[in-house]
Image 1 (cartoon, helix red, strand yellow):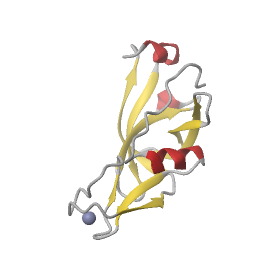
Image 2: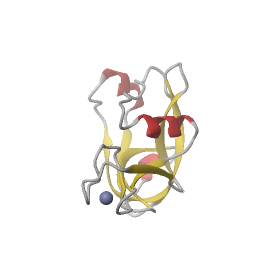
Image 3: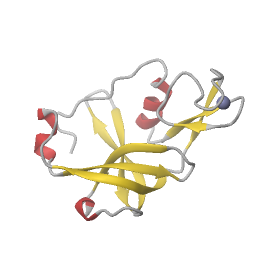
Image 4: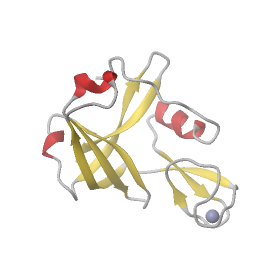
Length: 135
Ligand SMILES: [Zn+2]
């Protein structure tokens, strides 16, 4: 389903996250000083400002906090995919992340639905993007 969709843009802060996705793992940063989990990947802890960071694997389970259905894609590469669901997912571990709901029943999604992560191929070099499916 990835077609010509763009591959992730990786930077120094997000490289472990995207490598985890390539390995079908959803990784979260955890502050090594205060233990706070955070998403999206960034240099400093959102709670204490520490740059001392480790990574943990999330379960990949979460619930839909909110969502919208996109009928007119912002980028031409995504037009063939419309209508599609963009959702805010509350991960079991606490952080909230934006992703897509995919699958045959994606458009039937509701707030509070349980979802699980899966990884969608992007590009030709093994890159993958976390997506969610109704559980
Ligand atoms: Zn911290």
